[in-house]
Image (cartoon, rainbow, N blue to C red; front, side, top):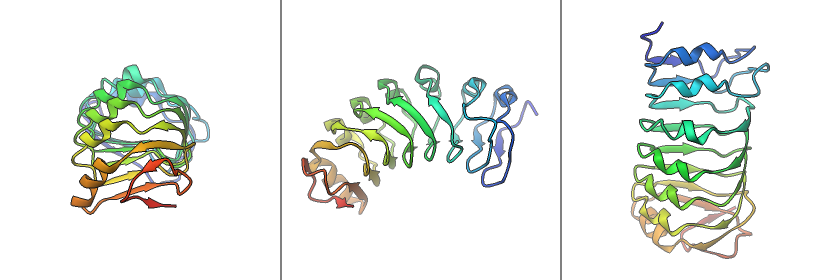
Length: 198
């Protein structure tokens, strides 16, 4: 299987562990493991990060824990889709996230435990159309560099620890694309005339 390029097994009832041997499939461009029941794997095998040419990586809803190795993840510069929502990852969002310049979808919400602020380097991900970071423990100033995300169509910031800042420029972009921008109604320090508030 060393020449395999697509490994798709999400939305099954697979149990056991996530095999570290997946890291031997170094020419994979698509790896989808999301929505399974790997009860024996609460931490992601580090060998996964050996697959440097991945374009599509789905690790959603696997109840994974621990810290993301941003130094290794940031080398996956071909990644267009990164789905890790519905896990229990913790730590901060590293400035190295700005190295993933091919990303079109960055999905880190729905139950993770990321904390700290949004790094301004996210503004380098100019191909992003979707940014989901809801239901974490993030807070602080919304970086003005988000206005660089001229392809953005969907941004979800709800159920974090409170943001503040001016999002008028981002509103202009999203209004043109009829996109959606979600923030908490309690985040009264966000200047965002176009936001949908929950």
